[in-house]
Amino acid sequence: MTLEEYILNHIDEEGEQLSRLSRNAHVNLLRPRMLSGHLQGRILKMLVRMQRPQRILEIGTYTGYATLCLAEALPENGEIHTIEIDDELEDFIRKQFEDSPLKDKIHLHTGDALDIIPQLKGTFDMVFIDADKRLYSEYYDLIFDKVPVGGIILADNTLWDGKVLEKPAAADKQTTGIQNFNEKIKQDTRIEKVILPLRDGLTIIYKLDHGHNENSKN
Ligand SMILES: C[S@@+](CC[C@H](N)C(=O)[O-])C[C@H]1O[C@@H](n2cnc3c(N)ncnc32)[C@H](O)[C@@H]1O
Image (cartoon, rainbow, N blue to C red; front, side, top):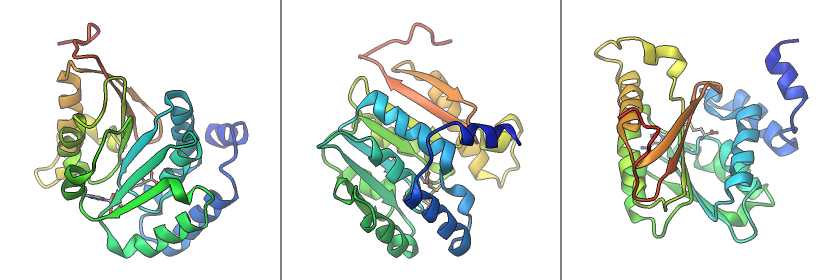
């Protein structure tokens, strides 16, 4: 047994719907590895339990796997908005949400997050950035003022398969995008930040009060 199998054997199960969704994605979709999966999904749910956000924004829906995990722990009147640019995924995603008892809490927006985010009203206590790796810094700038003090921003894939350690080829805009985002987050004194070496790297960002992060290296 691998350590990963041991972990999955000793944490909450993902549940019937999510395991069906995952199997379905592996049979029918390209790049099923993009979905969060059992362990990360349970961690996302736990973070919602701990933070108790009323409103969540997810950037990059893909199958809706993480959307459903985040929605599981939302409080009574909580809601999650999720944005997906690929309209060919819309039927698949809507079917997952329709099959869920959480469907009334979930709002799917089909289109480019760069266009949709400025149109979204209100604030988001938690944001999960998980779309185009080249655009992480742009997403961050767009959502920052929509996150209240004390809010959490999560960013997935911030270790990018270890490629963050390498000098990327000129054409590798995804690695450059993640490296630039990580540098930007490092320099930003308005937040506290930590990178969890979970899967492909999950950055957790906490928005401070006006503030200056005294633990910051800068
Ligand atoms: C890694 S997958 C998301 C996985 C999902 N969050 C999960 O954890 O299960 C990234 C998704 O972002 C979408 N995407 C890429 N650029 C986007 C953009 N500018 N706006 C909205 N979605 C985008 C892609 O089409 C893809 O489906």
